Length: 424
Image (tube, rainbow, N blue to C red):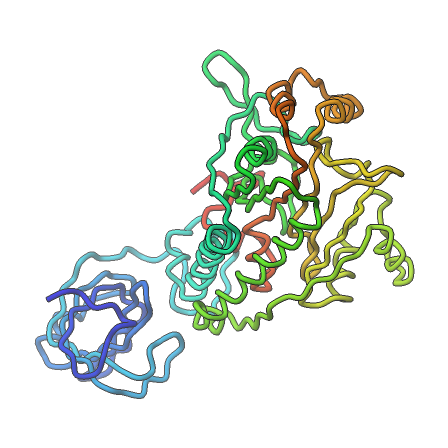
């Protein structure tokens, strides 16, 4: 008999189910086992002296194999399939579980996040935690599907070991590479530009490392990033692509992850878009009594934009060149082709039109006290008919966090890395 998943169980069928014991309800001559697999939880009814004896020492999170018959029912238990139950005909123990260091089956029990992360391999067994990562999986799949099917882009893989800073000024993690000192990449920026100037449209999901010594609920030292780059265009074209891909992600979640969103009590709306210049945002912040930086938006300004434009991706463009990296194209009068995308009161993406003219690149590197010799391969790639191009990077974890209204970004990382955590 082949295994049947909980989500596929149908009344009247003889089935084989495998999973973990999520909860035990022991009555005098009857026992209910809630069995969880990757698709859901089903109530299993154990009765009869032989089966009751066989299961008397079973505990939570024991893995078991059950044979039985599915019948219609009206089960009232959180996360459990309400329409059926499984009458057990035979049950086998696969493996025992030792005493659990964290509670799995009671979502009303508050366990400190640090303790949960120490035991992440168990924490992930909770339905609410599984729902987060089911959703994050769909977000990644939706990004790839949109880029390939809707945008005719090619997925690329870029190196994580670099010889010099990709962005300048950002602290880097040093590493030993044979007899040389190298760094873990804080961006695939330079590589995706070089590729776009030959293949036109490229994307990737890239792991970035940033050595800033922050300790906030919105930053990580190792994160995943959606990156996109397109040739023969300016920043406004790639802003449009970013808006469309986020809207596509939300539509996919509403269609494919309805149950997960219900478990997390999240109501998502497909976002609208709003375009504002940096100077217009500064004027808005002045009227609202919110301090706004001269070359950047602070946390308060981002939050206020989220309040003023709910469920909207706000593109802040015509950014001061002083607030952007060396590879962003200057536009004159101290402005640039750079932009940030603000959603639900937080920056989700940064991008812009890139510099494709070697002389401008060299000048901007020198102005930032960076040596053009360290970027020779990168600069030389634009000497052979490089077209105007633009792109952006958007954080996977931050976007997931905002979609779900989660307050700490570590909640949406399976095994987060910050200043203090490098295990498990």
